[in-house]
Length: 68
Image (cartoon, rainbow, N blue to C red; front, top):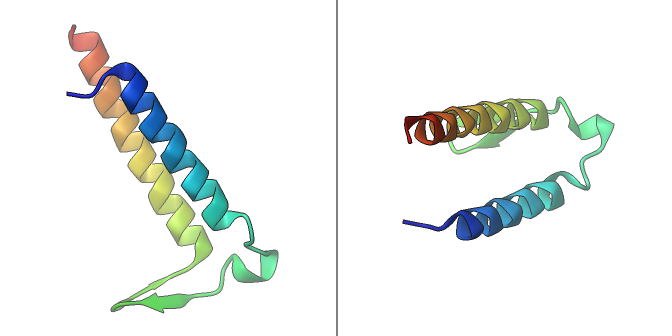
């Protein structure tokens, strides 16, 4: 099990990687669909998926913290 400090460092690294990934996105790129495998994605859809994923983890953390 990770300590709170380890989890915090992992989240910081994940945040930095995400911000680096979107740092060069222009407005023209925002809605453009690109094919990845058999799916089509836009920057907007990836941001929406990331936000939903973060909300799921936030809920898991909330449940873990309140269960103690």
